[in-house]
Amino acid sequence: MTTAASSTAFLGIDIGGTKVALRAEADGRKPYLATVTWPPGDDRGRDLAALAAQVRELTEAWGPVIRSVGVAMPATTYAGRVTAWPGRPGWTGLDLDATLADLFPQAQRAWADDGDLAAIAEADAAGVSHAVYLGVGTGIGGGVVLAGQPVPGPRGSCEVGHIVVDLDGTRCDCGRRGCVQALASGPATLRRAAELRGSPVGFTELRDGVAAGAEWATGAVRTSARALAAAAVSLSELVRPSVLIIGGGFAAGTPGYVDQVAAATAALARPGHRTPPVAAATLGGLSSLHGALLLARARGELLPPVDPS
Image (cartoon, rainbow, N blue to C red; front, side, top):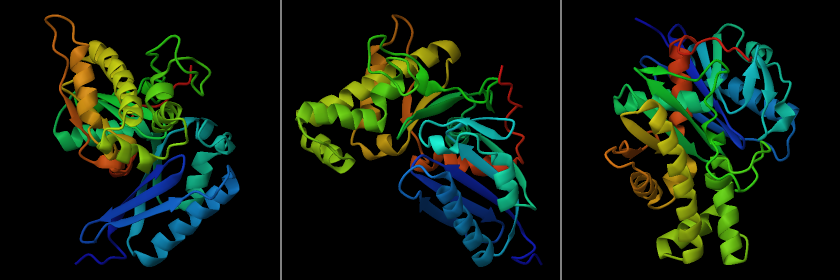
């Protein structure tokens, strides 16, 4: 009989701009779930200390030995180092490989772009082989799955948030104008709502405003949905997925958002060419976390090596 201490466990970690989520699974055990909010400010040392404390709690309280760890990251990484992360610039230069080795010295470790991992998880959950996933949250992430395999490109991520949908649009944090992330992300939509309302708007107020039919709220969300639809249609013309999956915390929490994206996508169809169906993510805001778990179970073999050139 397998005991808790000897059973093999897999750990998925989803590292985001405001928090980190962990999920561990092992046969015969209830999954371990935890979320840690990053300390205020952009302090890499404090962030890593908070993560280490949660890992200690996991290893001390849960039981099974972690054999493999998969990490979802919104940052650009190469050769084990974080090369860019606008969401938490203090992490730039971090030796991610060494950090994970310190936290999990006995485990196999792998990491990948959070959008690519979310796409893998959502395609798996939907039971489809060809899918495009777009996640709307603090930014816009996503990925492409073809023939059941992720297609992140040689640099390791699709960077769908930086598809340009308006040449004269809002400036993105990448320096370009009109990236879909600058128009359709959660923060971008809240800023637009504040401009229309004439006062600051939080997410709860936006959600309630949409439910009440307030024009400042519905107008802000409508613009976001149309921008996301433009990016989705552009991707669909390239890869012809079976389904366009819309996820992320902002999309999941905004009433009618996915339906608006679906309508805007259909409106962009070329004569004689239907756009793919649009569906809400089935994993909610946990797509990247479940993808990280799949990466852990595959021991890092889901994705090809990264070439930065």
